[in-house]
Length: 161
Ligand SMILES: [Zn+2]
Image: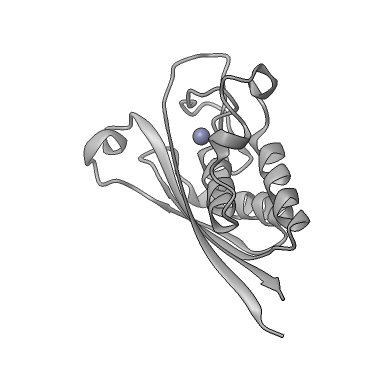
C-alpha cells in the first residue's frame, strides 16, 4: 500500500477597518478592542489561508471559487464554518490532513497569548495539528505600517491508495 501525499499553500490578507460593528477574529479567537479587519465574511485571515492551503493541496481550486464574496449567503459568516466545509470536501475525496503550519503576519495585536486557543480551534476542525506562528513585518510595507494582517499556510494531506 502506498500513500498519496500532496502539499498546498495558502495566502490571505485583509485591510483593517474602523467599522465599530466588526470584531477582529483570528483563528476563531476574538480580540475585542483590537482594530478589526474588513471583509465580506468575518475576515478571519488564518481560517481563510488554512482553507486555501487545503483546497490547493487537494487540487480543488481556491476559497473564492467555493465561497464567492458576491454571495449574500456568506456575508458575515463564521470562517470556521467555511473551513469545516472545506475539510468535509477533502474527507469526501478520501484525503486526511497530516498537518498545517501558519505564519500570521501583523504588527498588532500580540499573537502569543491567543496562540494556543487558535491552534485548538483550527486543529479540532482540521482533525490534525495546526500550528500558528505570529511574526511582525518589522515596520516594512503596508503590514508594517499596520494597514492590515496577512497569513500564510502550508498544508500536507495524505490518501491511502
Ligand atoms: Zn480572507
